[in-house]
Image 1 (cartoon, one colour):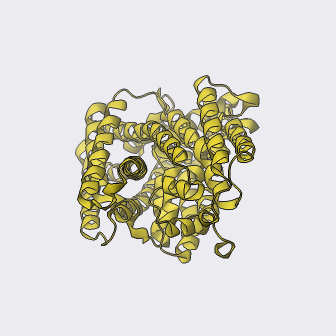
Image 2 (cartoon, one colour; image 1 turned 90 degrees about the vertical axis):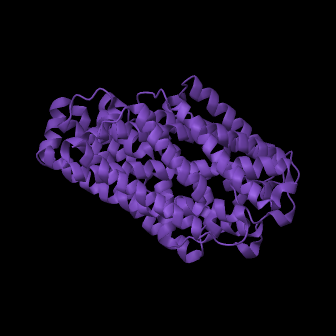
Length: 484
């Protein structure tokens, strides 16, 4: 049976490698940095929707989220659906304004955008270091998720699965670049849709139908079918915090934002908003409902994160299980390649070229450095993921919150407030990042709110106060009224 499960996954990984080779051969002429990190800004609407969706949907969504739904019940499914507007908000708020500045300044990274807007090298260094620290945690989660999938569904030891997953993702990201990433994201989005529908149908069937599944959940614990969830975790403060963290705050995630500067035209943005929102709705509802109803099929799992891999091999025929195994693997791979590329771009473009600007035209050197850094980061992540925690969703949310606390207000206010300056942006980044780190480290929840809520409020206040003491940014750095 294991061979029947593994073969579809192997076939999928071969297709991923094939697309990466195709992307390498089809690289556009011109600037290596613009092509490797942005794919020469050529994405259409469908590809834009799929790459944003695949980047947003991660190991947390396919492993951690359903694991939480398994533990807390149907209330968590409702909670997960507040993520529905994430793609619409990202493209709607960033969208055209973000792309106007990016094209004007030939920006390749989010930090390019921040420098163009605020004209502060200190801000770029602080943003770069914050991004790398948070991404180490976020990318470690993806590596753990990929290894756990192979361990549970294919019977491969965790360490072996980690090596297989890590080597695959490192090679195709390092040599394929952004174009390979978005092509594979499109494939991965389709695989995720098919896999989600297959698994949900299988779980409902194995539970004896939807009414029977709900009845079994009620017998296990009546609160599994209550809106507040088992353990009464889903309070209004928690739900508000969750919405800020995984929906509104996503606007400030660097690997999401950079995809908003790589599309082809306005038509692509409008189409991407619609398609992306529909795809996110199907994936979020399907995966979390499968996790919640999975408790009716597998009532005694000790590690909630194992519910999806275990359901795969329990309720699906071996070949279908193999196809589905590719779905969460696709989600994980698409997220990790986006984060790896962004980390590599930060080191090469935002840090190295700031120290050695004379190397900007050394295409061969930059190409070798970009690939080498991606491979080195992958090795470090393998080591970090060697001993995983029990539930990865909390580690993933911790890293996401740190990025949002640092980047959200400097990015959004930089686009929409002409008087925003570097002093305000630096104040917001430092206060938001430090407060979030302290509250999250000591697990402080004021009035029941997650640390991201007070961190973003204090960050906004710090921006407004700090802005009073800064110098205005040159008009050339601000979007003109004609561009609005």
